[in-house]
Image (cartoon, rainbow, N blue to C red; front, top):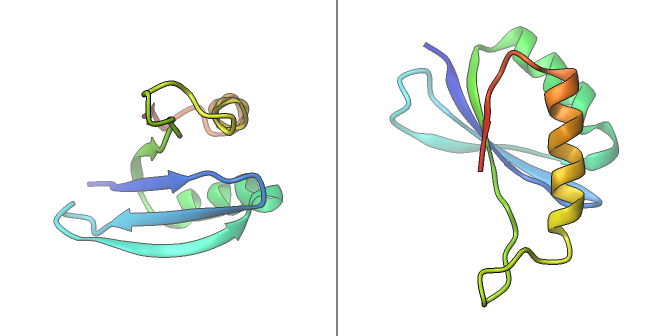
Length: 90
């Protein structure tokens, strides 16, 4: 059984949280500089079984993509390329 990893992507720093292997409890994992996020994630998934990435998509109050959403989408494309075996949901 793999963990679920939540990613709150930011242009400078990204917050990460993971569930326990049974997916009962979620806890904060770390805050990582976004420029080293992909290598950090690649290293983490080699050590721990991650079943899925859940990525927060920033929205405005009118439920439209916020200005930062374009950077999240760029990051998601990079993550799909670098770690293609783990599915991504929003």
